[in-house]
Length: 142
Image 1 (tube, helix red, strand yellow):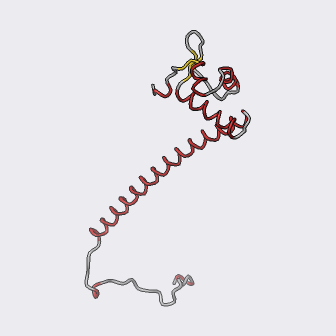
Image 2: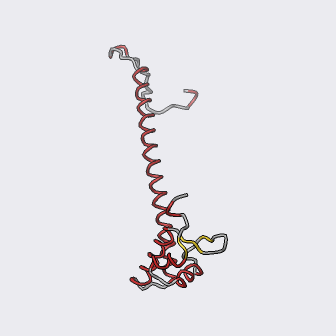
Image 3: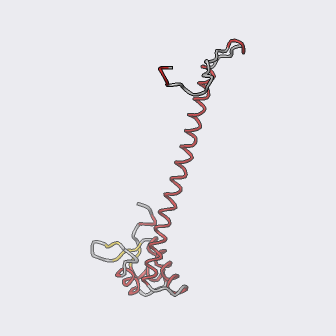
């Protein structure tokens, strides 16, 4: 398990690290902003990521004056943005791989041309007869 996600802080310690009262963390949990793990004895346990999220919530409420509904919305948009950025990075990497593969395939086709083409003197080229009118005459089987 990632050490940042390992639940190690009880509610009092987490509240102190964030700089809030433990009841505030309970309210954040009730509003769906924080999701602490529960021990066997039903004690709330917070991980380092929870503490960092609590600090972020405090920044949004105290410094920017947001209410908890606004904070929830901002956090959801930040998560969505992070997900889209990761997807965008993945798609860009895939595009680079496909361009490289396409370039290799085009190069292979061009190398095959060299094997198929044979140089011949100009006079020996055979030309297809041309229709003098430029249009196919369909009258009477012509």
